[in-house]
Length: 152
Image 1 (cartoon, rainbow, N blue to C red):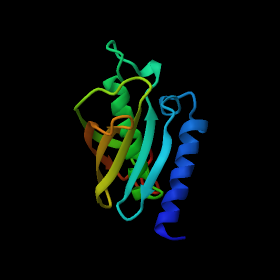
Image 2: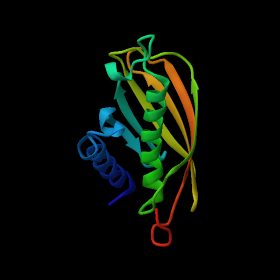
Image 3: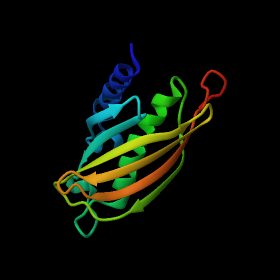
Image 4: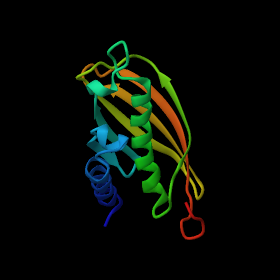
């Protein structure tokens, strides 16, 4: 199977795990949708509808929900790059640019900038589907843990 088809199959599996297998966890509650992926770019894009439970006191998507969306999209890239290995988050640095309102969908694109044996670095951008404007950016780092040698 070529790389693009493998990544698409992986993303379909990840979406099922998030939305069905983990429906009662934060991953499932985020209701993410597949937007697309690029094996060549090592990137994955997910859509996150902005739901009432995610609102802050101003009626916009809470910063923690934005951060969660970044972690979900970036982790999907990190796990793909890690293969069979476990890939926990080491750091996640978010820069908030503008609010995203209820009823909109935030599109997050996560792209691996470096994928080594132990560390995967990923950059992310989130845009409002409604306006097309940049909402926030993130830089993340994940560790590739060899599950044949180390226990979680």
